[in-house]
Image (cartoon, rainbow, N blue to C red; front, side, top):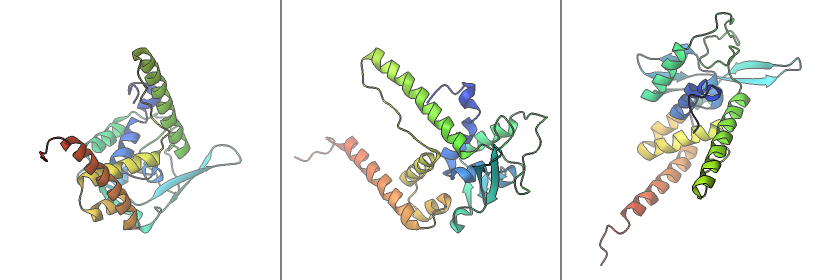
Amino acid sequence: MSDSSNPRYSRCTNLFVTLLGTGMRIGECLGLRWADVDFKKNLISVNHAISCKDTEAGGYAYRIHSPKTAAGNRVIPMFNDVREALQNEKRKKKNPDWEPFTVNGCTGFIFLNSNGKVYTPAAVFDKIQSIVTDYNHVEATKAREQEREPVLIPKISAHILRHTFCTRLCEVEPNIKVIQEVMGHKNIRTTMDIYNEATEEAKLDRFRALDGTIDLG
């Protein structure tokens, strides 16, 4: 959306690629550790999530907990883009003065902020909103210069990235059970609702493209 070389956004690029390429919930993705990634088998194990809340003394208290539902314990195959993003994150130079970030005895977390701590969901949300705001500002300026209506991005969240992944997966994967397992949906009805919505839109798009190509006379 915006210039990926901008340091305001580039630090989070690998996180966003992972969110959009796996459909993980934000707490699951932020809680991801290197021990959960198998580059040999090309798999990501989702077996916990991380959450945090403000403390009275200032700062945040982090906690590791089980996924939202039992179905949340799952294994997700990695797309090449996700694999590359994680490898890029692994190659990042870490500040030698950082103490290992540990929560409930767990360490080796992948996505760390400039202070060497796991991002909070709120910080990720704010980062997404900053990107959207900056993009919309640039797009509105271009639209005025080109005398056209701007194509603006609505307010989005990490959950929208999850929903987008699921929708795209539904468009290309006919096996509903595979989609349910990858997404960690407890109820297959949730998967079916997204699948029906995605395939309905794909059907409409296909018929728009075919309109006029079939001789009905």
